[in-house]
Image (cartoon, rainbow, N blue to C red):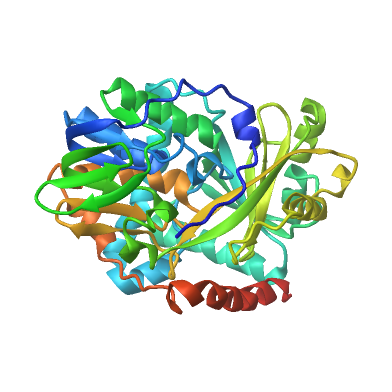
Length: 428
């Protein structure tokens, strides 16, 4: 899957100074575990394994946090893109509940890592799902009931229009479901912070080291252009980047291009007037919008997607127009940064975790819920590689199907299928 989105510089990149890059792999190495991919999932896996005493080598094709982990909206939300009802149908009520609890642990893991490793990532608490139309208001009420009655999750509060408008300077939303235990952060700072912690724990990082092939067997050999790693176990954590080295996995995920814009700094007073309590917000359309304030008082607004995988030239302007549909008072405000990236989705929007061989593990298919799920997935996969596989195997039981149409026709088929969901978003 050779998807290449134009690497426009994001506000995230512009707002920090990266550590010095680690050298590409050169020569042959040995390790207990080789991790492929230095996003949050890969860095989390490597960190947990190193803390257990494993010798770990991590290979990254580009830079740490180059992919979705360093480009996303940064929202820390429990749960999955797939509905809990779908998970119950596949796994039964007890294991579906366990999966929900794992994501709550994932939110706690973010909080603990930020504290324990002193990661400066603009962490803030509070997130709202917002309804645009009456039927979505009813959906949020059902979510609220399900959280409290089925999962004993009591951090959410349902809000009618007046209360939402007391927090947001917009007339767009008729209701909201506010979650005080969810939140948001600067995703690239968070990813880089986990990487620093992993390196401090002894993980060998090699950036600029694209994997060209994997030789499977009792000892796995992971090759790059200029070297190799012989490892007892391998963890594949590169999501849409796995296409050339693991085609069987690539057929089960699709890279969907999504975009974010950042305004110029608005000043503290004007930014606070837009979102009065510094929460993150997303609507519940299929093609959704999401937004939050940055630490330097910008509005970050994202959500426009391209199911064709083509990066159109007007993405920044198109995303700005979506922003103005929520906050028309920003019509005079310059967009200073515009960038995109790929979200890996599965057919059923549930995560795809498993093994290709007893010693070859993978994580993919986070489907837009990666900020929380990647971190806890890395912890759970590290447990499995250390011989405690019970939690990992709950995920491995979820059945996944290839996208229809084969590698050549599946993307046009997805574009046609998504037209129905776009039309549904327009219905009252």
